[in-house]
Amino acid sequence: MYTVIGTVKSRAFRVMWMLEELGQSYDLIPAGPRSDEAKQYNPSGKIPALKDGEDVLTDSVAIMQYLADKHGALTAPAGTPARARQDAMLFWLIDEFDAILWAAAKHSFVFPEEARVPAIKDSLKAEFARSAKALSDRLDGPFLMGDAITVPDLLAVHCLNWSIGAGFDPVDDKLGAWAGELRKRDAFKAVRARDS
Image (cartoon, rainbow, N blue to C red; front, top):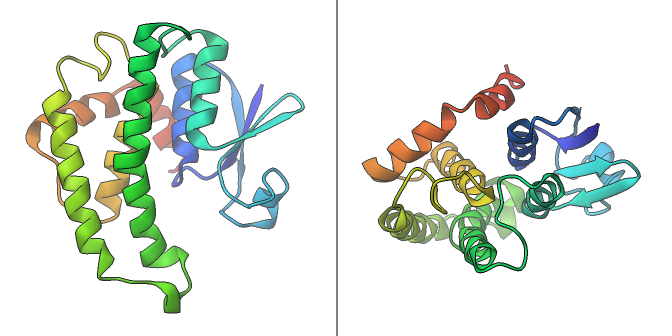
């Protein structure tokens, strides 16, 4: 049994979604960022963390890929060209989606007020819109990497959800419809239900 440390309204959602897709049982220890509880598992206080036996892993994307590799699902095999393409998509999403959203969050509520530059958010929103259009243009099939769901799909949909909550402009209809279909998955709905 796994233990996820974090909250449903954080990047821990991605990890829980992955566990649900894999059919793995897990407990959730509710812990906000930089809380004493979070620091017990990650000295930086960042969430999520995943406890797998005696091992504690951090960083949502690293955890997701670890779980996919460990269970041999939602991923191309390591050492294959398909995996290299999947990793390239994953890294692109981290750079072009996640990092932009995180920068906006830092300038909205993470940084102390005197360190925030609210004006930067307009340029971040424009950059995210360009990246969302590029992703929409690349989308050719039911999933980002072809006919099977993989780690990048979960990451992309989570970031699109985050962008909605952050007040970013809506993405185009094609990308929005694609994300909407993935939100209908039982695994996604199971994590969402934990927040009610």
